[in-house]
Amino acid sequence: MSAILTARELRKRYRGVTAVDGLNLDIEEGSCLGLLGPNGAGKSTTIEMLEGLLQPSSGEIRFRGRPLDQHYRERVGIQFQNTALQDFLTVRENLQFFAALYKRRRSLDELIAGCHLEEYLDRDHRRLSGGQRQRMLLAIALINDPDLVFLDEPTTGLDPQARRNFWELVQDVRRRGKTVLLTTHYMDEAYELSDDIAIMDRGRIVARGSPQQLLSEHFSDSVLELPAAEIKGREQELSAVTRGDAAEILSADVNKTVQKLLAAGVSLAQLKIRPRTLEDLFISLTGRELRA
Ligand SMILES: Nc1ncnc2c1ncn2[C@@H]1O[C@H](COP(=O)(O)OP(=O)(O)OP(=O)(O)O)[C@@H](O)[C@H]1O
Image 1 (cartoon, rainbow, N blue to C red):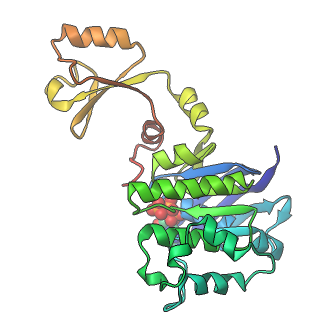
Image 2: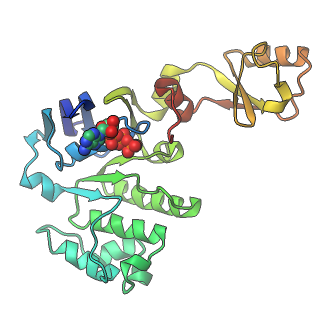
Image 3: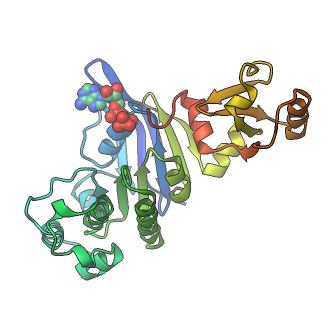
């Protein structure tokens, strides 16, 4: 496997703040890397440097071994959260506007069909729903048939169905052999779309690997979940942690823990046993929930 993009000792300092602190990263050709981190971890700063839009304070970024140059701009696609779109332009006109900026382009008809935009082509882009808007922004990001696509929180604010529909489109992009760099605040999205995950905290990568690798490297236990009311006042005795309405008990030996709960007279009628998730990993590494 070869890296499409490499970053070495990347740093970005703002006055008094080190946003990115010596980051090393290889992104494999054809992979989908999910970049996760709590608010302020340095994701946006990292992405903007990797996109070639923000100058690092120090360090080096290379695309297929070459420094980021005009060739790079022709080869990447960026789905911005807020692209500066021209007011009063329809979806079709916006696509035409962006297509004119590139020498190399995908057929617009193919993109329109691929991103399911046929029904909205003549609508002012300001009148699109959240999901339709994200699909148009994805089409714009793909307009130059890029090899590397940046998706920055592409489904924030979308309803579950629109998110799933968008995931399908990202899978299509991957099937076309493209490399994807995704930032997201949704663990299920990272799990669904990424085969490689990097968790950032305080400007550094604190964990890296496939979702399965990360979970098996960091955890050998399971989580027993009960309604918090069931063990109220006995959290310490039962080694339970309360999260909202649920109490969680970590266990490396589920049989033993269940016996202990039964012996303590706890009702197991609503007991749920689940493996550890990326969300657990995230909290254990950063001490914070994904979305603050
Ligand atoms: N232009 C700037 N000037 C000064 N400090 C900045 C600037 N941009 C970012 N920072 C600081 O750098 C740190 C990293 O910010 P960044 O936006 O990269 O984090 P993030 O992981 O993308 O966060 P979020 O998930 O909230 O978007 C933060 O402490 C932030 O306040």
